Length: 78
Image (cartoon, rainbow, N blue to C red):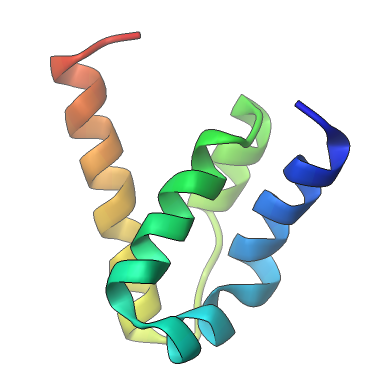
């Protein structure tokens, strides 16, 4: 993984997520979150799970993503 992708993926969650959500809507934001999260290191994945968002909608969207990923891992372990 290149450093640029890692930084872009992490910045999506800690800087750009609310703006992306406002511009692109729920479905596109969820897709981008899935894309970005998969590219993070295990350490950064844990950090992202601890982020707090000002928007309840964005917070719920991220929680949905993590629940979905946890569900998929239980049924399709890597």
